[in-house]
Image (cartoon, rainbow, N blue to C red; front, side, top):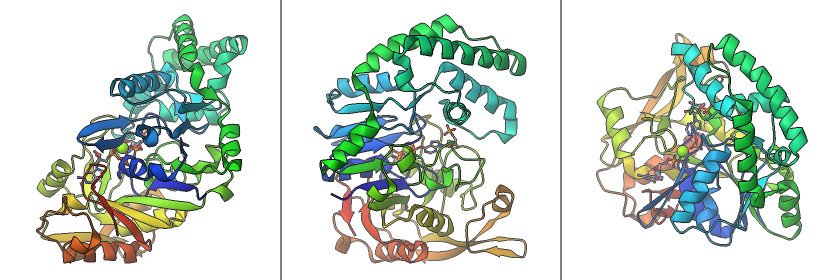
Length: 424
Ligand code: GDP
Ligand code: IMO
Ligand code: MG
């Protein structure tokens, strides 16, 4: 069976959740491999809205196996909330959910340090989701993290938490001038959490590899997007994990040779939440119009998303890093009624021209977009169910995106509902 990886090709929120849900029937297992509760993946079924932060977006399909991989940083409090919400909405959560014993746990000090460090940065803040993601990955790489499986070795967990918290409390009191956190409170709370998630915790590396041996198929669910990838995005205005396909093998323990297809998700325009350069950002009324029409408000934090024109240079870079085999264009309907559509085909900075995505922030910050313009369409595309019925200019726009980014578009999404999707 072919295994696929679904990735965002922009700054996140491309509509990955919707597409993963729509494709889930073709796979046996859906696995999240990086990020944490910073993600907000929306699925709308018959008008009912579900937002997944940690649980894979395939969960709405009964019988599918949903795995939170070792590369994810796990906020247990958020996970328990999510389980309760899904159960209350009638979604089955039980033997279909698996949590890697290697997933690093997000502790209260991670969230606190995330917010204090942002405050300290002032105008230079990253604009994080405040979910403790960066500080938890810092501990993972610094080898001062605690993993899900560690919670069940009480002596080890207790000693390790004590020594880590001592160090964090020194930082909290001496660097940030705030009160220390209580060991007893955190220890008791997380011991209780550990019992609650115990039925789901397993050796996910064995689970996934055994499943492959039994010809099961896997869909790897990327969170965030390539431009937020810690190596290939607009560093330091990125998240702290590899949001490209590069994160999938490390975040699951499945060999890269087992990922047969990469499907990139791209919005018909661009959005970004938080700080950082965004050359094609549309300031003023038109930006607000797209924001409102597209419902561009964060699924995790509710923050308004900055909106801009499609950046073909950035998406081409994302497609290259991911080795994207095909793309899905989402939110085409949001552009209905625009007279003219701009697409960025290069950058300029003074007399310097860029035809590729620059690595360094200082260079990218100075980049101004070079646009090509294309005619828009007046028709409402949200009821369209096949390629043939698309307005001529809408098809021409998609064909242009294919040429400029070098990826074949296989699906087009024209609304938030599961059904508003057709082959291209
Ligand atoms: P993700 O993080 O990539 O899963 O994306 P989000 O769920 O954060 O944001 C995408 C938003 O756009 C959600 O509110 C979706 O319901 C919505 N959405 C997805 N596809 C479409 C589409 O084709 N058209 C419109 N209008 N909305 C869409
Ligand atoms: P999904 O999976 C959009 C952004 C934050 C911030 C930066 C770092 O829904 O596409 P972090 O909390 O990760 O340290 O924040 O990354 N960010 C996202 N933007 N969609 C996401 O996830 C994001 N996850 C993080 O806004 O700019
Ligand atoms: Mg999102």
